[in-house]
Length: 238
Image (cartoon, rainbow, N blue to C red; front, side):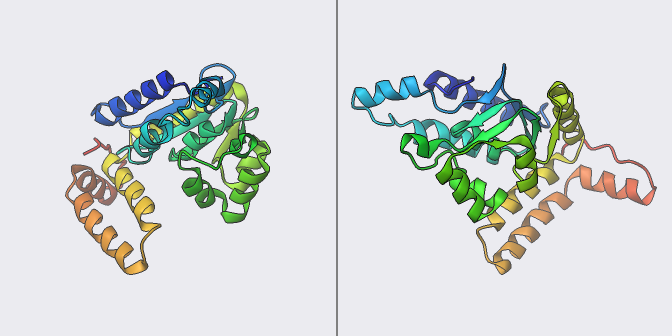
């Protein structure tokens, strides 16, 4: 079920760093192997830490926080293909991605309260921005599964497809994004992330500053010329 052990979290963080630094990668696709997207924290490992007096053993600050920030700050689009259950921190990882496609059998479960915990891995920040404060409170407090169809209705995912079409649909979306203006996508991500915590005047200034940077890219010039010629632009990502 892709539960998150310390080893798995370190491997995921390393993969995120490689994707960030790989100039040949223009989009990132995150999915789970087998029947689940991610069942969240490995509770057997967690129980051992508790029994031995180590508490959370630094996993939130040392593992989850860097992973979530790595996804959110990735300077290229990140697509989550949710192929089954996404629970606890596993759901939070999906919420940290830019776009989410779910299989019909997928579901989201904010399971933290079931084990006497608050939320982590960014859920307190991402979830209310996706579904609103009231629904976020409901999902976190009641800790009931949200099936894919409901997830689409409330805005957790942008698309639901039959299970056997998920891989191709997610890859098609990732390829579409990989062929787009990478710098502009990174700018949009930064604007939405930081703009949500700014007043209008500061958001306007941030937009102006980032727009200046986009205007200097070859992609912008190419696309502008292509538009005037009524042609389809070919983006290079810089």
